[in-house]
Image 1: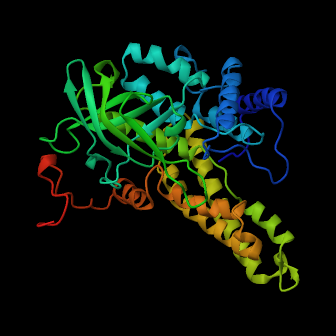
Image 2 (image 1 turned 60 degrees about the horizontal axis):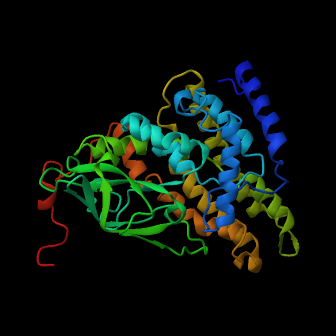
Image 3 (image 1 turned 60 degrees about the vertical axis):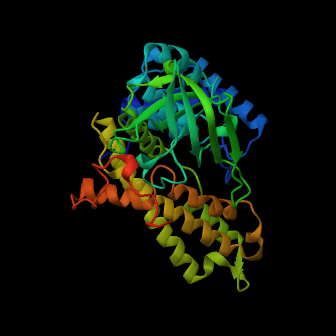
Length: 406
């Protein structure tokens, strides 16, 4: 494995730095980039849209998208190079990851020509923000167990039900939703996928107040919400296949990301904090803990390089991205917890490490819970026997939802 840039990657990296130097300042030591928007602040949304438009106008938006859809058609390894460089600058919050990283590719793969023409260019430029309406309270980690219904009514569909944990719904113009259109067939076969105008009558959005004070997630309720049939993505009953396309791109998007506290930040914090009257970095137990974090972080880093190597060779990455999330998300939570403890009483303030710690449980749910990822690795990588799935061939309406008599 060669950790150095290829000549092509080095040239692309230099080009990216030239653009970034011209339009945004580098991060200061200890400063982090805008990250993912967690607050409903119109000014932050405005700044994010302006930055996305700037990138689009200069050829730095949606780099892997085909040119016909407003992208640049570069290889995935060059997109990673761009992400690495952009992460070094004080850019606006990222509110387009769901649309550009997951839903745009889904429209390209399954949408009609009219849907591609209407949405992809505006999505790339940041004119519209998109949200993903998948999770439901009654389905848990079983996405195919969803109950939000869509019933045909003339040229429209009527949507009724509830979605939850919908990131960014409060400032999204459009959403993509999976619904149940036929409860008389097996659960995976009765689903259909739609594009929804989030300003449609019958949609109620309730932000969820999180433990760290943010409201990045929402409950979204649908009451006889009309969606034209022209907004249906792919065939009626083929929603599961479309959803899998979205999920595959979701894991890839999350795997390409980063952020949060690093082991290097922990070293800096331990140098500034005191323990028993001495700098905490001099305590042997603290040093051992930091060393463990550093070793694990290095393991993740070099596992990530395996993905980059696969991408640079034009091959599909293996299970590395699932391993990275399965190990990285719990480690981020442990690192935030240790940093908060290290700060003593000042760690009780909801800022810095504690904010990271309180927000980190969401990382263990988004894009597949720890348990789902373990199942994927067990069944698809280690080839262990699959879990019994008694409802696989049963009509959805016949699947019990509660113990008998309840």
